Length: 199
Length: 313
Figure 1 (cartoon, rainbow over the protein chains, first blue to last red):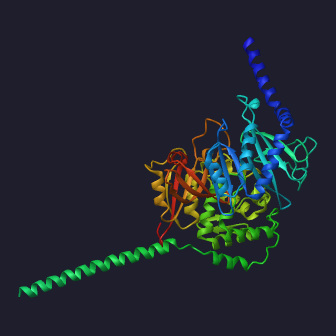
Figure 2 (figure 1 turned 90 degrees about the horizontal axis):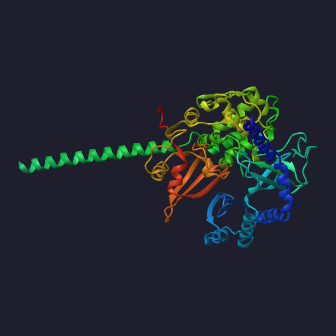
């Protein structure tokens, strides 16, 4: 009987932790708003000069992969942090070295695994958003599959339903999904979800 | 007397050498001719452009309620002119059909254009040995897929991929044969290795030498050497484990199965022993440097596709 009670309590605890996801991420955003917004803004500015994405390829944030897209081909390189090749590569593709390295350092500081630009379409018009994934230790719960906070930064204010879910502008009753996930409001231009994939 | 005998002997030898040299030349010429034929596409881009440019506009078709006819026509034209732009959509299971389409658009763009126009106008069309006759659910949704990146505004790609997935079935599709909205991301659209090679043989005049499987890596001693050899002619398509190639989480345990098809465009070895590969997927060419061990780890299938010569089976 006591064992059964323990099991029920354990299940409840796991469910409670899982349901806290939205609270966690909103609190996380509030606590790190300045850093997150700065990363998003810096990335948007640099990406406008030359399209690229940054990925930390390991949990310890010691290796970084840069995907540089030109008109004809996408180059994927992987470096150790502080490796000289990283700077040389950025120069080769005319990406600003200091700004990009600063971005990588800022990403590491808040455990941001991945940042990229994503195109989306509304009424056949192209829009773009900044897609950021953050691996949070506080949310790394065993048995709970979803491990990454995803934040999306839009250039324009978005539409939400009464439950704060992101809507597709074309048909406002239809939920907008990215990578099959539903997104929720943080503010007019920033949404979040929790996912088991960082991109 | 001896002098004449020697002279005859020389003449005989000379004739035989001449015949031998001629036979070699003929064989080489025949081979060269076959190779020219082998590299010749079924139709050319110019043929396709000529055909599609004659169609000024398409009328809306109630059979395809979500297809914008203008975007549909523009999409076909873009695929003919820029076949590498073909995009399989964000997080769909259409990668196998996209790799197949690479072959279609490079080998028979005219056939592709005619097939698409016929599908739009008549609801069915023949391509190669197959007749594509999409189900009612495909009619309802084609052109209406959303949140797939640029595929949102490419209705011809949506129709083409959905039709292929609806028509060709493999064991991975056993539990879901009827399309419902969202199934483009599920096993309904999945492509196993046997099905992939079958689709090429059914739709195109290609001979496919396939090494590999859905579960085990091919027994190839040196993957780099093998791939380099296949790259000398035809088209090479790799069936790879994308959870390693295109990392999406930090999980230590990963399913050791292939999940993605890429078209190999170039392979070379760098001075430091690393392997440079250029491949096509997701509407992009990508250059990436891999270790030989990594290349072996991700490779589960290699399909080498060469044009059939005349009536070769």
